[in-house]
Image (cartoon, rainbow, N blue to C red; front, side):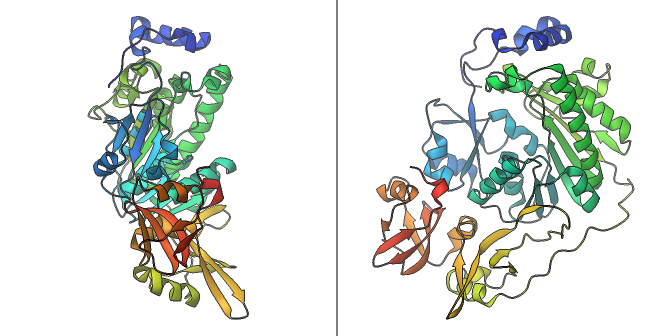
Length: 466
């Protein structure tokens, strides 16, 4: 891990936290809590849905070094850089997150065609990693209980071009009741007391206390029980936190195993980063060493990860989840798609009111569950004197813009790229009249409408770089 080691940063830690950790770690405390770099690092995880992560990292022009925590993840060396305003960020080429936060999703062993659930998904970095590993094949459920955070999750997955996700805003117990045994993989990045965020987020230290630890431990236990019900026999469950407390980490996992004897703990000693879990935080149970901890000295702010497997011969759920909603032909969409997205013209489309969307493949019906997005919003039908007219959506072009038959192709350092992201009209060079995708070095930046040699900007106002 690049950077200069600095002395202990004990002033960052609440006294009660430090007393507990010194009692548990003894002489190891000062070494493990010595940060590997003088300031919190930012990580960029590149989106394999947009191309090869190594090539994307090289093309974006940012000072990056490979991260040890996940494939396709990098550490941003320039503390003053503003990656969120970079055109490649607008185009969904990467997601910004604390480096060690990329580790849990990479340990879930996701591959195309699986059914995957992320139960605490906002703001979406780990969900994006899962989606990239799935390559658009298989069903991805991205759930967030907090409504405001769920809206951010939906926006991020749209920017990243995820096509096979259903975004829900639900209690995990309701999901477990609706979809028992429906998933091959489940990720629980649990709400936690945030002890690993003391340096990065001073508010975490200000609100810290044992009641918060106990509340988060109870909440994590309830979510884990829902995850157990959602997982199919033979499936994998990854549980993670960004905290160090025994109640939320090793003791949480061992208590889960006691409640759910159909599960076993997988050994993460070959993960390539971090250190073993601490048995003395779980009644000196040696199984705790199978977990993984990322300490400040290891280059992250702080993470705990455990991977569990449900026995292949575990009892299967008593009923199947409901089947998907049936898609009906939408002539206005089909006419539009034949012109601009011929590869999608045969895809089924669902219409609800004036809204048209392309459903996530294999997504079940979810009665009683609040669904924010189910697949890709394609656009809406506007009815006038001439009949129904299809108006496309930004999400359609973020997901499939590179496959659009009419494109305006920009380059990263083209002045028109910055103008486009500011919401301005730009001069057309490659697009024909009508609706067109706007791309930067082949990556989607939404869409516009070309007329008279100019492209009217339809980039959403809330996303523009003003």
